[in-house]
Length: 160
Length: 234
Image (cartoon, rainbow over all chains, first blue to last red; front, top):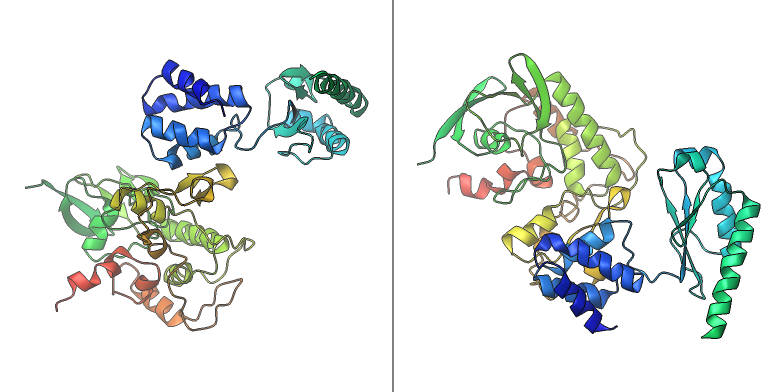
């Protein structure tokens, strides 16, 4: 873990306990998840008990305590998406990636998550891949989309 | 000298120190308001809602937890009205469904007259009363454990399930937990309510709002029972 990065983040943010969330957001953005040693460091730096930092990290859906894959697939299961067939989208992703919601594929390529609403109900069913919203999804479109992302991922992995 | 305020609980006029809670005032005066998450000398959080009462203000009735309700001069409180008793039984039914294996919870059910629960037994061995969390934080200044997660996933845990260095191994979190009170030797009808304490139940039903220092108090760790050693003449 590059501790120098952590130091920079801690320096750039305030030192009051209410600044912890901003630091956690930065760390989440940098690493894709919140590793244990970083939370320990944050707790030392702010001089708050570790449970306080852990409590925050476990409370918000935006934070992950487990390593995430290189690509994040989020399926909206809100009411509007649900009636427009979101469960079928989820089944499709589960079948394609062979992971349950909240899990990461073995090759660390994909993490599957569900969300309760994205506030874009007119576009439902929605699947978000790496921050990009894909509305009016169908199992077929989703399969093609996942295939394209996987091909891109394998090209990048191969080139490294 | 702290200012005193006068409140009325179930028709009885009680004087209590300003700033004390209605629950503390009532228990002090010997009026039994059943409670679970309340502990003497630890801040109240109103987690279990068992101690709900009705506050009558100018004809309006509002239900609220008495442990987090500060006593104000002239306050009129009903702790055993029909509405309160019904709501309290309902709350205890929910608590029983969460943790039927606890002697404290079984005694509490007997105390408020709950003999069955309409809810599926979830048997989670925790009612999220927060006694352990508060005793760790406030009595031992340790903050080793706390609430983690949210919604249905909210639970008490250690950070990363490891004992942090802050923990003083005092074991208080276990001692105050309603789940750890030594079970009664009788058979526990799990899942369900054993109802073997029905003699106690009829007693508390006949004299509902008077503290008789019942043995049930030991089960649900009633604040007054815990102070009994101090209150009773030697």
